[in-house]
Length: 187
Image (cartoon, rainbow, N blue to C red; front, top):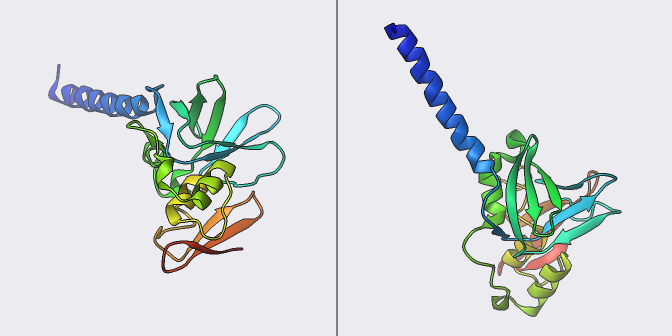
């Protein structure tokens, strides 16, 4: 085999190994836990969720609660959350808009360690988390669990005074935090 052919074969082998590592990151995995609620909606044929975190997309909206056990599978537009009951939630991720790839993003919403200990939260936080809604007085961490990780493309600084979430494709919700990192206003 010529030196040039060996280089081409070696580069191809490296490419295949890198590609295999990327694909395996999305292959069906062990059961993991959601670190936050996932707001999903059932359309005519699928259940979908989005990095944009549609917190009230309308008819068919439901909340998959924090600490739900899920597995991950690859999907051409992101990844699939597979629930224990067999339902698939197609989770759309646009890396250029989000500022991170699928594996990085899903690690912001999943943990393989343990469930989130909700007993450490205030009554206001626990109610908001359970209902999938945000109210004045909730902590920043309570909001993150109730609504999900703030969409990075709209919240480049998660320590900022305001977080933006989408209610649906056309409307936004702005959550304002005070100096004590508690919700002071919702617009």
